[in-house]
Image 1: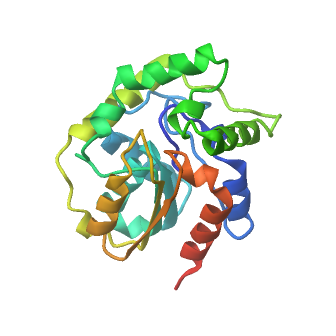
Image 2: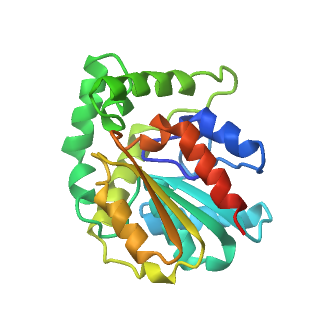
Length: 247
């Protein structure tokens, strides 16, 4: 499980993890320099992917199913391209390809920091603004999601540092400016999911991934934002389990 910008292992929706853990061995990971992990945050998505591969190999896995949300989806794509032998199945949520139009704009410091300021002024998590629509349905989903993230009380992870966050943000901006990769080389069956109104990684980039990755499946949730897979966690969990179980 490869998480989003600024996230530690605690940022994964527990309902999604619980659903997967009923039938699968689930590993959520803090890459170097994030949360409780020592080291320095890799400066590029490629270097983050290399670190994740190193983790898998150190754990003794010859193959794994990768699920990446947002920045985690960038990392998962890179691993699938670099080490297809390691990736059995792929889940890409709220994410987009390298060179994807709009990624650099919507993840620019002014854009992200503005919503972080809005969250601080409203005395809530910035994800309420970044991940969810600001209508009644979105606000209700945001509140429920943020409450779920606080359910586990013991051994909570160390929050990401400002320096680490800035390094990740620069890596994402570089990904948005990077050369388009040949996604037809991804061999793992791929599930792609997003909301229809993603302000962080434009929703049309999910359609672009689907068009370019062979043997991929696309699900777009209506009236949902960047956190559409968490707003629709029950349905998303169901199709992920179905995807991983397919022959």
